[in-house]
Image 1: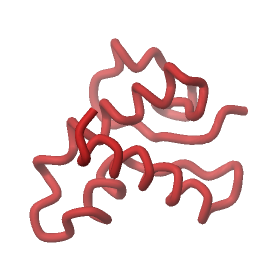
Image 2 (image 1 turned 120 degrees about the vertical axis):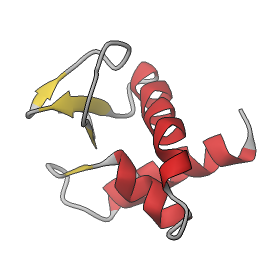
Image 3 (image 1 turned 135 degrees about the vertical axis):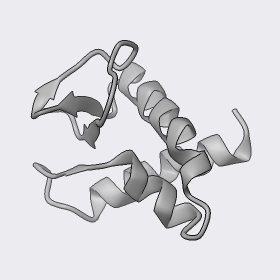
Image 4 (image 1 turned 90 degrees about the horizontal axis):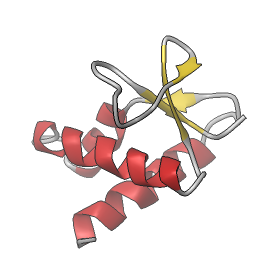
Length: 83
C-alpha cells in the first residue's frame, strides 16, 4: 500500500468518526477532503480503500441503504460503520 492508500483509509476513519454512528459518507467526500481541486482521480482509489476496510470488518459498503458486496457494486456507494 502506498501513502495515498493509507491517507484515504485514515480519512475514511476520520470522516466517519466525526459523524453520528448511523451516518454514512460518500467516496467523493473522502477524495475531496484530500484533494479539493483535483479529487476525481482519487475516486477509484477511495472506493478501493473502502473495499480493503470492508475486508477487515471496519466498514460496510451500501447502496440504497442495503449492504452490498464491494467487489460487485457498480454505481454510487456509501461507506458506514458496521451495524
